[in-house]
Length: 300
Image (tube, rainbow, N blue to C red; front, side, top):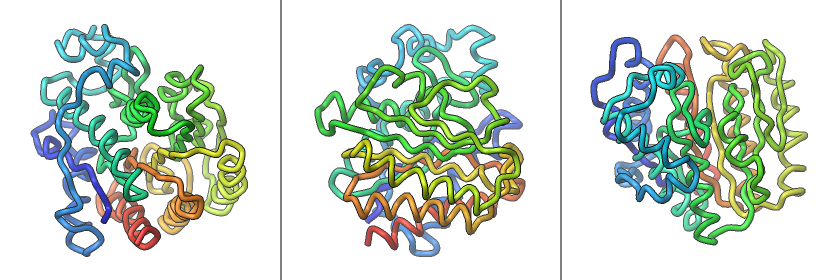
């Protein structure tokens, strides 16, 4: 069983220009069920979470501005989406999908959020299509409920997890690791506990060697009892926003290495999808589907 948070609100109409990036959230579940990687019973629809879980990470004033649709025009421009009640509800459900997924991971070893990876959301603001930081909210939930003691966030999206780094800057119970494009967004980087900045046009061999050298040592050093994995596929050479030159096969090997390490060390892992902006939707779906395919083989 692969517990997977699914968000039916992604089917709601979006303004022109924002539809294509959301299409993968509808098509990916269909592909996974069509090929037998996942069953309909693997998916669950998260409700809106208790706001106290959101306030534990994000400033109350910021969240209330989101709920009341009263953010300043400048703040809305930084987010990139026009605010709407549907968008805020979707973000709340995404956050709860990661919370519930994390709880399921404690039982099953792994869970997925078909969306999530909103790592550009800070304590008091959103950026780059990220309003609420789903993995940060879920990490704080696990710590607050004393379900885990040490968490490592493995962020392999092509963009630095700047919001996540800021949120946990002073929290020693969460180790933030981000491996990302050096010259890519955000152009002003925050300081994660460990940042690896990759040059433009980085290919599979260099990318994977960096990961192979780093992650096992990090796990040995920090000894986490939970991992959040942000599995963005915008490292692909075809990605419009990525600037790296990894292949589909390289991206697949990346996911396999991370998930096999989690399984080997018996560390529960929650996976959020993160970015993917290749021109052809089938490339995005195949790359994301590989993460689920590997999880199915590793954890079953």
